[in-house]
Image 1 (cartoon, chains in turn red, yellow):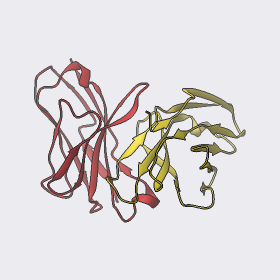
Image 2 (cartoon, rainbow over the protein chains, first blue to last red):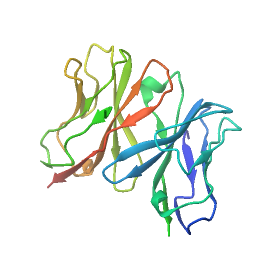
Image 3 (cartoon, chains in turn orange, blue):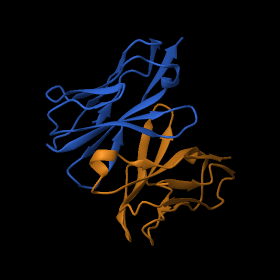
Length: 115
Length: 116
């Protein structure tokens, strides 16, 4: 089944403790992206990747890092999480060929709480 | 300036009635794509419908249709014959350019509640 898999689904952590949210897709998509969703703000892009070893900042990159060493994986790293990073996070992927027709495939989301 | 504006934080509709969710967009790129997503209470993002800027006809997918008015820069979602399962958050989104950076810009969403 074609999908984007995020882990974990839920995470509660303490301020300053480094964490990684994993994202993996099995569709051979070139493009991957991370979003955070906050009430009243919709989804805002954190980082995106056009292909392996190609990453760039989105609208809200502060406090986050990403890497794209393999096409299928695009982990989101919080080196020193803070309470204002409490949010619902989504990973998404798309192929350039089908992006216009099928939209983007989203993961199930990761609900992160930083205390 | 906001690229996507959804002015209705919440909407109510009677079951079996039709409802329109508003979306306006802002871009100077002649090539763009417009998307609608549904987010039920379980949290996942479900793709509903797509409209390309060069598409001559309004997109339709089952009970969903997109009322695309290019001159007004609006892309309203019409849901016909509402069902209880349609209660969810709905997001309008836009991608600029043919391939470009493939970035999706989202609106703030509209929460739809279907009343029995």
